[in-house]
Figure 1 (cartoon, rainbow, N blue to C red):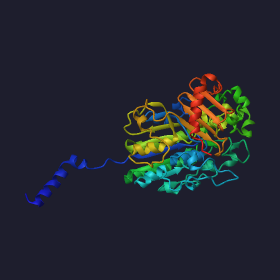
Figure 2: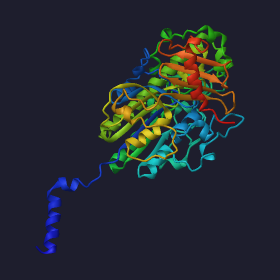
Figure 3: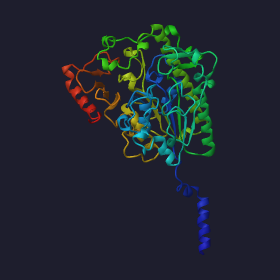
Figure 4: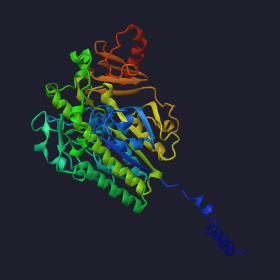
Length: 478
């Protein structure tokens, strides 16, 4: 057969036999929808919080793996976010604080590790379209809503900074400190604006538009949607406050150690205005926090519903999490920046197409540092070798597996007095300065309220020694 006829015959076979042609095509690259709340603890329906209404997060849990024991590296917005977005520990990136009035320029990781490749940047460099809507790195809330604030422009192809009426109605907001809204307890049941008028509602709409664009352009994407709620000020449409009648809101009990604040280092995050608040104000703050959570959940639902409507869910990894936990009067504390369980534990749901354990829950330990290598693993990317986290992909196929035995968190400014905590199995151990004068050990299974300090009990000496040695590995060498 002449060569020309042979080539024509082979081309015909390629057209006539779709299976042969398809065998040479690469499978489509997985997308990522990264959803993150701001200051959300595990007061979520699927995590067993009584009465808290989060139907969309709960629904997401039925299609993914729910990690019941996930911990942030640092319970403060900027250090936590810069840590998990770079995949590096706070001591490595040198970010251990938020901006303050005395130092309005926040420490930024690129000052210490300028050539690092962030999580979204890895996807961007490999052909994904990386987009940010709302808060991913750090924002001063509410002051920086509507701006890029502390952002890393290397990380994204496009950024969108929504701004709603919650940014501009300060005079109506109830606050413990006049004129201050973001760093103290403050709240408002908005009787005039609806979901679409608020920043998170606008952000959800912008995320929806991007998803429609990605569908139209058939473009692989890494879409990060950062919601601002339930961060203070706890502002949401009034209908969400109506879900939580004030007369049904209760305050958590306090242990003798909580009342005496012993040891003092464990309670260093307390603030005078919160200590002086009335019980009515505290109950109003709890009501508003849960209302803001339900409002955020509704906006999350709009985004996930769009992913489903557009037929993108079958090839998209969905992640839902928060930057750190949050105190709501437990231990007599409010907000974050402590290393008690409630301040450092975060919700985490990963829904990966085809994962064998989807719809199940795991008690396996996880750190926020694990997000970077896990998403890279799920999407077939090779992450930088220097990452400090571990891929949780094995757990997504078998919830009985574990990739780590401990999870570590810290607070402080890089001094010998810094506090470190480790969760290991049933135990939470905390110490400050590595000294025996400030250490706590709790059995989280028998004592989830952390009321009985077992650190000085001789029966637990071996556990204390083991966990102390683990934390010594984390302290910077002097």
